Length: 359
Image (cartoon, rainbow, N blue to C red):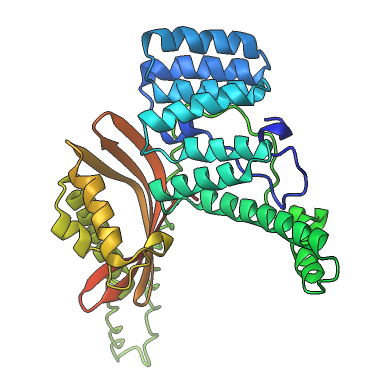
């Protein structure tokens, strides 16, 4: 991706990250080949042919969000930000549940120095998915740029204000090459992958086979007439008792799967009960506002399926972290993403205290 696809102004501390929605959507095998071929053309720089193939595909499937997203990426690569903005805007209108198009709109707006529009787009991305870490990071970058502009304007209007220069200098320290080097570079991303990358299951520790004690050598007889003393029987090693951590891991796993089942069944009582009273609600929402928003998003769907794959659990005392790939389907929408649930034990139950997507 060309730098202009991120920011034309190099003063920003880090470039906004342009994401590939196609990596987050479940792709039927029959369509994956078509996506692969179009992406291969993009990687080869054959943007004209890639666009022709995308348009041909969309002629028969005009609402396909994945190919439309690829088209927006092609338009961005081709230096047509206005066309890309139109494409991503239409995707947000047809699929408001997806945060990635909002993120890419923000990237394009920021590239045109339209930081207020970039901010609004990122706030929509976060509202759509409050656990969207990339959008939060990008929003921070946009706020930094807006603050820099505001301080520069204040200094221009009142050059004698001694409070402004230190603030401006502080923000500018984020713009130095050293600061940029500490964060992921806005490298040109490869064309979006066409299938959800399922991380390999965490390696299981090798089973430890308990060593069998060697049989003791027979005792030498004291005298030929005296029988040798019988060797003491060797007891077999006792099987290792299940540790509390192993039991806790099973409890956490069962809790996570019950939470997914309640979500799939639109059982709001069980779903909301899976969250602790001190759950870190996204966006500083009140618990009541968050619950109402979740109800409207879940109950309004005609059918929901939430599947958990590659679940790994790490328990440390009364705290636990569950990481997995979540395959979510609702009506015509299919999304696969990485999910992390931070949990705490309250009495005999494990409850969710924080959730995040990605990573």
